[in-house]
Structure formats: C-alpha cells, structure tokens
Image (tube, rainbow, N blue to C red; front, side, top):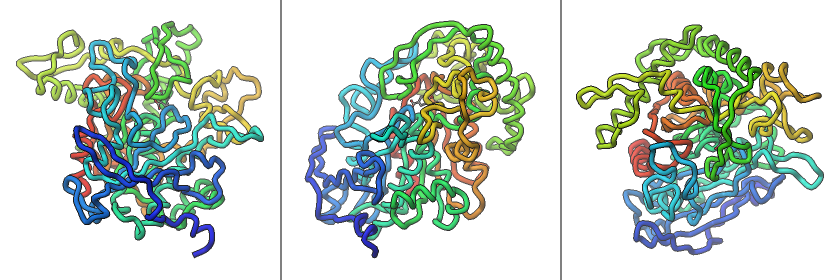
Length: 505
Ligand code: DHB
C-alpha cells in the first residue's frame, strides 16, 4: 500500500464513545469523526466523513434486526441549496427549523413531533443508528466556497466528487470496518441533497467505466487523492430532488405558465432546511413572454427522452402541455390524496379534487396548479440575470456565476456572461446520467423517490421523469408524492427505514 493509501486506511481504534438519546433509548455508539476521504483535499473541513457504529456491533450484539455483519450503511448528506455541507452528527437536526414556512392548510413543515425533521426530535442520524444502521455522513463542498487566493472551490461537479470520494473510502475500507456492509450503501438526501443522492446512484461504476463515462470527475478524484476503489451504491433515497437542471426551467413553466403572481424566495434561502421569507410579486410582461417560450419547449424535450410509464406507455406531451406525462403527474397526486383520505385526513377545501363515495376520482389540473402557486420567477433556474443558486453552482474556479443553458445565455442580461460546458451540466443531471450510462456502469438497483404535493421548488414532472429514467435502466423504483408536504425531506423515516429493510434483505 502506498503512503497516500495508508492515510486513508481506517483505524478502528481511534474513536470517541458517544451516547445517542433516541425515543427513550440510550444507544452507545463509537464515533469516528472528521475522517479524510482524500489525501490532497482543497477544502479539508468538508472533504471528510463522520462514521458512527453502534457499540453493540463490537460486542457481537444486535441492534434491531441487524448485526455488525448485516447492517447496511446509511449515507445521508446534509446538502441544501447546493451550498457547502459539513458532515452530519447524531445531534444535528434533521430537517427544517420549527416554524419554517409550511403549506397552507397543511401540517407544519417539521412533520410529526419527535419523528424526524423539526421540533426537538432526534436527528435522522440518531434514528438511523437506533434502527441498527451504520451511519456514514459525508461533508460536501458547495457553490459558495472560496479559497484564500480567490478561486472558487465548490463549483459543479465538486459536490458529486466529494460524495464519490466518501463512497470510495467506504469500499476501500470495507474489510476494515467493524460493522456495516459496503455492498449495502443507502444514500439519502433532500432537495439539492436529493439530487446529489440520485446522481450518486445514477453514476456509480467500476473504475474502468468511470474513466470513460465521467472523465472529469474521475480526473478530479485522482487529483484529490481519493481511495483507489469503485463507487457503486446499493440504494438511493431522494426527497424532492432538484435535478434535470438544464430542463427544469421548461418543466417549471409547463406547470406554472399563466400563473403570474408569485411568492419568491431569495437564493440564500434555497436550502430546504432554512426558514424562508417569501416576497410576493407578479411576473413582468417580459418574464411572461419567457414563460410562454419555455412552456412551449417542454413537450419536444420530453418527447425526445423516450421514457415510458409503469405500464410501458410512452410518457409524452402534446404541444399544449397535455398528455401522458401530465396524466402521470395527476395520477400521482390523486394516489397521494387517496392515501391521505384512507388514513383519515380531511380533504376539505381542496376544491380542485373530486371526491365521490370515499374515493378521490378527479383532479382539476388548472385549479390545482393555481392553488399551489408559483414560488420562482421566470426562468426559475437558469436566471437571465444570473441570480439563481444554480447559476452559482455552475460557476468555475474563476467565475462565480454562469449560465448552464444556451437558451438563457442567448437571453442573458449580464454583460460578458458565459455558460458552463454541456458535459459539466450533464454530469450534474441524474436523469441524463441514467439515460446515458452505458451497460458497463453500475447504477444503484433500488430507488425511493418522495416529493410533496405542495412542493413548488421544481415542477412535479421532475421526480416523475427521474423515476421513469431509473425504470428505463431496469432499476426498481418506488415513487410517491407525499400528501401536503412542502419542500422538505426525512418526514417519513419509519417508512423509509421499512423500505430499506425490505430492500437490503
Ligand atoms: C434547493 C431548493 C431550490 O429551490 C433549489 O433551486 C435548489 C436547492 C434546496 O432546498 O436544496
């Protein structure tokens, strides 16, 4: 083993004992925090992993249904807004702060008290440990990081590179881990973190394949000194993934064109875990014209993807935006409402739903999208004034903000604005990666995608297309819209853990 590889070797004897309080249980855990995942980091505070292993696994014992030999490795990232994220800890909160903006008429953003996000309940990491998982939480560089020499250090694809470095570290050290299966890594994330979780699952592969498919990512991993190991993962959990960014503007206007009033948030508030302040306004005539252009472009894009629904029918759209993809979105909302009704929730006031004899039988798409309301101005992602978080994500070492579509570049209001190259944009797109990866790559075989029916940070077509792209690759997909949930994640951890338990078995 070379000297750099020695630095990445896991030393099980260097831990901090920790007691994690969760649901009345005091769980003893060995904490290995701040483990470097690369030997030549550019941001040493972020390119690290926190690893937590239940003490029982060192004593031949069990936690829940798992032992050291059988426990999956849960890999939650804490990314929001494509901002930098420190590795998570069991003490960290797992979702939006109490009082964060919630859906009108819906439950508080924080979800059920004590069960996941918000409130003072245990963190996602604490709950995962109490369930018997080994938890590995990676730090991730993000769009605002800058070195002392002024260069930007967290632009795309840095976040993906860091997640892959963490996965490679786990595979490299698989034989040295006192607990947890590197062949059962389950990634989890919300929003930008959900997109990255999906991307990790979409782009996994052997080292040889990666050299061809992900040349730039591979080169950066080598330059950073990542562990010499492959980076496949077993399962993806993604909440409200903000992905398919180069077409998210079209999707957004497909959903909201004609809804001119908005309640906008600042780019500093894109992070799903921060409290949001919404500023009301109305699209200008120029923005309305852009909206019409983008909405008109979406059907051709969708029709070119060649995706199908579960029954094998083409997921297409007619020029007016109606058609099977919209029907698939509507069917998901209807199924979500039906589940809510079946669990005793009231659908009163949802005038866009038709409920007959205890069954949700219809949805008025026009009324639903107007009731939902627009959160973002046009264009929602590749802002012609370079004002979005995604513009900042697609900067480079010397440029803070760039466009990432030819369409917005051609309409840019910023003198001298440039655009990221198409390969970088594609590398950050889980839908594109799923559709382009060749047969030699190793996408995660299991996917669970959740998205709230009150989420307007991106169009509902995005999770539906992501699910279809994963199915297209022959992967197993569990997609559902979560009733009344706004932009948030980790609100149904018992169900997520149940899915993981069934999937890894
Ligand atoms: C997030 C939210 C957004 O609206 C966005 O465009 C990107 C990221 C987030 O919450 O992570």
